Image 1 (cartoon, rainbow, N blue to C red):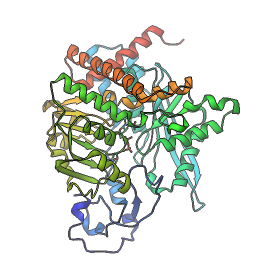
Image 2: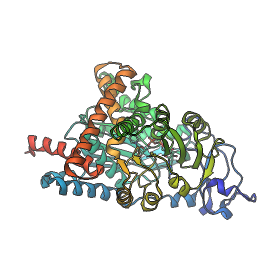
Image 3: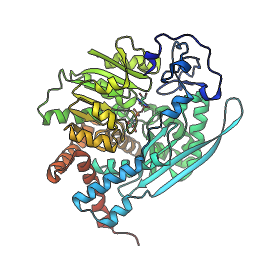
Length: 490
Ligand code: NAD
């Protein structure tokens, strides 16, 4: 049961005072960076109406400690990633020694750093940067600010970045990082100090030619600009302007690239268009639903609209909504920007999580967090295609069920690679002091992602495997070639 169901028959109780049920302010999305308003109100998630039946806030979204503990959705993500490698290896008989290298991360950094809070007390935070492999080029991967960030998740996501850059043939390796925080718990000023102090703690473990972070869940261009500025401020003055490209996904004025903000969603849509073309499927009038209405989900949704497709259902961390006549993706994006989530969007009705997954549509775009398509969700899905905008959105059981139900899947490491491809363009522009036009970016992005799509499709046909295994084979093949050519030092 979600927030909208909870509103029915609520008697207005005072806020619970016990520590366990303490309500915490939560504003979805790019939390509080611009707004930073603190309000009191209803837990937007909790099933326990009796405890959380509180007045609804005018704006903003709330959750309680119970929900926080309940959202744990981990199931050994790293182990799952390695199982895929095993599977690909068994199909294509990859070199065992190289598989041994791929099963491990190269470097794992855990930093604990102090930050002064607004009320002057000091809090110590934990941050991670895992560098999986740099055989193909500098480490590359996003930074996530989320309470569920831990070493297992970061390891898994770093490993997936290596496959992603290998599949699309760009000269980067794989890395990932993050801080275990809920950004909504902090003021904009505190968040800035956290981001800067984390950057300082990472020190020379990141760098424009060594390891280049980018935005991921709950991080954005503004945070990238703070990281860039902190990095540049702590190196020799004559080096500074050669280091613009220490992060990608920056604001345009700070050296960002046009087209980077929409790049991941754009890549998802290029893949969907190619799938439609290959399968003789008409996207005009086709229906789709989206889970996660942040950067990736909202851009994918808006770009799908340009194909004449119709969005029927959307779910984010604040709730699930549906309108059989269609939800306008641009209008919803404006609403989410203003209200922090899709909940209470007036032009759609609130539905349950189960009803969201059961909604019959042609295409489902998961663009939230990992393991969303588990056994139960996969059983409910009634779609032709799953285009994975998120990283690791389908767990092992879910994947088996999608295959049994003959639902096509464009796997994450291919489908959401648009972000890292345009990050590569941003990095190149910074290095060359160039500014590319949007047309040029989109044309190059499409060329790269579609040729990767073709490689994955061809591998699936050649080895008679599902697309996820095929994508893994393509990535491992490229890495194996490089290791075989270079050998192992010394
Ligand atoms: P974001 O922070 O902009 O948006 C995340 C969205 O997921 C929000 O709408 C949030 O409400 C929703 N969400 C969170 N928890 C949820 C839950 N339990 N149920 C339903 N919805 C939930 O993040 P993003 O940058 O759009 O990233 C989304 C996914 O795409 C992540 O898996 C990320 O790793 C992946 N990805 C992002 C990029 C990028 O360029 N940003 C690139 C490649 C892959």
